[in-house]
Length: 384
Image (cartoon, rainbow, N blue to C red; front, side, top):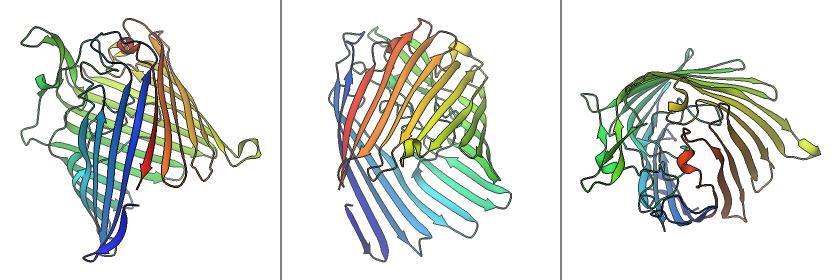
């Protein structure tokens, strides 16, 4: 804990983490412009202040990464810089914040508010901070979120020397961004808990967080991909049913705009066996099917794919956990494996291990350009 003290009537808490990381690529790159393995350093702070009997709160999370190989991966961001006020049956968040929607494990189709920070991890789960005004209403008929989203954030992409990029690099400076006349995006989400059922429906209208990548050339004649961000409308559905050790999950979207309307879904289950082998640990089995009616043209590469995984939690003082999974292309386009593990080391540090291993990719597969980019990453975060 960096500090915890009252100042000017506000109770402040602060935490600083410094995390050296090393990403080791198992094979030489396809492109001679690309570098080998990547050392990097992440610095992240979190400062929170509360007052008015905790009805008001300010939250500030700056983030910065220094990467030794890819200049695009050396970047900083304000993940959060917001003021939250809690009223009687309502709540507002003003400023830069993060909103997460979704229930499935293999991908989060409905999670569209924040832009993906793709240079951080290819799993697309790291997000950039988004300027917003979020009004939440708590009623007997459910919870309603109304969001006005300000400045658009473009997606980050690995640079020419970076790994886990398309064969032709993405040139962010050539981006084309379509915006509503008010230069803002709009989103809403209704959610309700009914017995064993958790249900949510959402709608987004604005600039797509997922760009179309169009082949072009720079002024010097170098081939590059140009990101084009079209206006879209996306409606989403989330469903989770809890039955004892079983979690049944569904995410589905329909998107209009961007040159190609499409429907996509993820559905499956997670079964958890508690206290396995007469211990305190839990073992979960996950199976999810990913569908996209664009098939091989899906931007995510997950058009007809089955995700299978095992999740283990030790439930110990170190909070040790491990996820091992595989994404299997049912149309024989490609397969890859993932590894995610972490646990505390001592009182003020946490060790993490992450990996993604591409074992097969057909030429028409979205992951074909990454076939030599299997990696294992080790990091340790020190907390102050």
